[in-house]
Image (cartoon, rainbow, N blue to C red; front, side, top):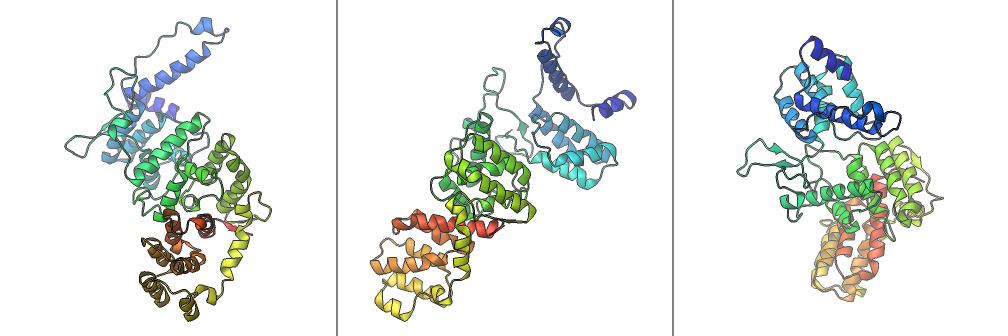
Length: 415
């Protein structure tokens, strides 16, 4: 790529911008400075002149080139702009990213529209902070946070938003924090209750997945997977998140990194989790009968119980039951809706849990509904047990059922 840029500049008069040249010159100078620390090379490198100070930050350069790319009409200009953007990328991942092959194609072959669109979309997936115009407008000013630079604009993330109120904001903030700490070989993971909130809402309902961003990267997904399997007791649901990640190889690599600084629960569960991720990636079946953690080992038993549930168990409110356990008026109406089929088990249980007071017969009715909340369609019933105090003694049961439902519905096949 560098050779082609040189050839275009020398023979065709088309080169990268001055900003890109300065950024690359700075990289080369930093490398030379590193080499100069060697006693053998120091005498030859100590007087190498430094390039001029960087005028624009890399992120700002990329944002500027992105706007120019969207307005470009011919393929040659688009390819040149894409080369410029990728050559100044501030971060090179350890694992070969998917876009490398598409980039190589546009470098050596006539560019295809789908390759150009894919590369442009890949760059837009890197969410950058804008300093937006006060009174709106289409164009924003690309900026970076540089608190130690006295000449920079006085802006910081805490000045952009005082509190994070929306679920997508909290989701992205958890990702930022977790990845920052991982680079410091520490774990700072999302709250497990936030995971339950995401499971209850679904990623689409929570606004995490949108028309523009329909999949998660491994960098976005791993903090929530690590949080789910770092908890005391039953792991929290997270396969609904894994299912939306299209970088399972990289997700596995992130999980192995997290394991090195994770707690005992995460370390104990990691072999079975990795095996499950690999099986999911290959559309294969994972064997969990010898799993170290009971949460994995019991999946087969729980799945069998669900599959073998009788019709009598699915219809618990017989006349004999209702005569023995006379429910209150409100709960009685909910039960009638369930019997009539206008409410499923999850909605019925959730409606009962939302009532201010329950008598013993009401609680008995709620417990008859609990075993029927074994899939994603009834998950709101399980969540309602965690969010209210009516059935405090059954929160552990609700968590186990939530884990089982999520794994069966979204995870790999298992035996």
